[in-house]
Image 1: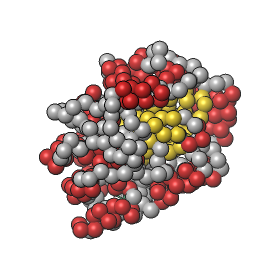
Image 2 (image 1 turned 30 degrees about the vertical axis):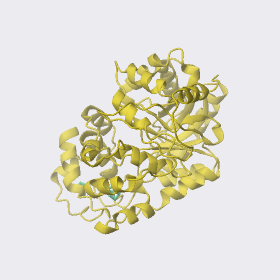
Image 3 (image 1 turned 135 degrees about the vertical axis):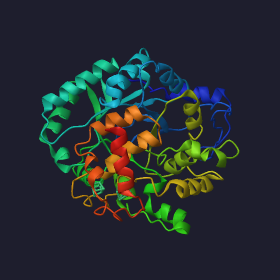
Image 4 (image 1 turned 90 degrees about the horizontal axis):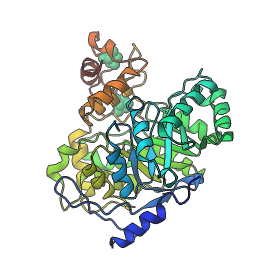
Length: 408
Ligand code: SF4
Ligand code: SF4
């Protein structure tokens, strides 16, 4: 079983490096391309009732592929101690690489895996998925196992899931239980599970574009109003129940290169977006896909923040101005019933984001192939039924139709 999850050693590295700053202070020693490397993680936070102390900026491995153990090692060296994965990521490569990279250091990290379950799935089937993950991860336990991409109350109520969780816990294969999601009915799922006290941790898509109060203020000059009002409430409810909260999709689409011309004084858009997320007292930490060492250095530069730094608001405003009308908030459900053909609009737009913003077409295709109803109907549809359905001004037909052509 784990000891200190790397906290003490990272703290010592931090002190040795002589990093300056206060607990609430903002350190913008960031890197991208031409900047100095970050000195490492400066903030560890208690993950709710799990009592795990995890790095506030943590490793998302959804795009981790064979031959990339160096990324995991770089993250470890910078003090990251929370590694999020899933059976489905990069068709198992992600867990395999993590397992290889964490050899000898397993007890220093918090390891997360997830599985997309179905309402009729049996406990035996779930156990098989978990066993396969354990094998790929080269470990005999996973710290937090999540019901992944939840979007259906029936999935949350499936008695087989609860039977599976109880058995896996009894057998020492998992320590804590979570749920993750980013789709339209996520809020309903989380409300139910929190009310039933079924969760230790939640992982939710959360960024400055999804907080109505903040986004309204930020964008009133160009008239866009966010309607997703319940996510901040659910995060607060989780915190009240001492459930750990981890945020994902924190970059609102991650069009980082668009923002380089506007970044000043070593502070980047990504860091501003992270500081916004971490300044929410109801969020414990965030995960972010890390695809290069320079990117890891840049991201970790925002660690330790609990408030925005000077210049952050201007960067967030600029980003919203450039991208607000093409970024799908995903947990907003305003377009849920707009399509008579049942196209999963938010999910389609999420996969589009992977291809066009993250520039990872292979990952986008994998995710697109898993959609139960893709956007094939859009090819022959006039686009009338969903026209105007998005309060954020997203031209659904214009984006969904080419997405199918690109990813199918
Ligand atoms: S397309 Fe618009 S309405 Fe639909 S989920 Fe995305 S942001 Fe919400
Ligand atoms: S374009 Fe047509 S098929 Fe596609 S989401 Fe809109 S209504 Fe549905």
